[in-house]
Image 1 (cartoon, rainbow, N blue to C red):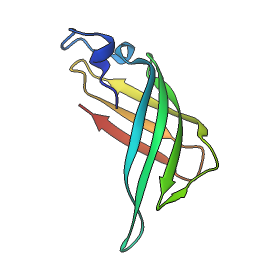
Image 2: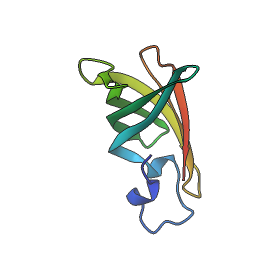
Image 3: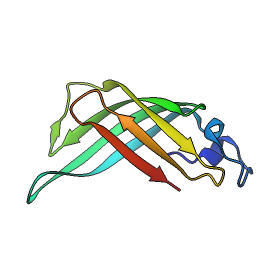
Image 4: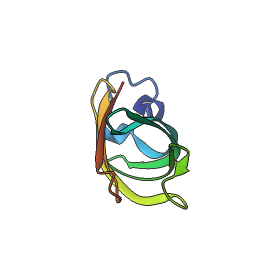
Length: 107
């Protein structure tokens, strides 16, 4: 996740949802465990737009086990986020497909 201090440099301990606003590109990397003993690599790219008020939208392109999950960028993904005063935070993204939701935290 992006570092909210970048949009408010020098504001140690002064972060909030308003500190995280704008478009951020990121990579996606990890593993999917679809069944016992099965591990598939997951890689992709995403563009996330944070509104500074605790919600965001995202579009991404992901490859799992060497196969693209779609023919183009997945759009319409939405989520919520919270930036704490110490600049740590959490986010939950809700996917439009059968992937469900994912919760994450960052420092």
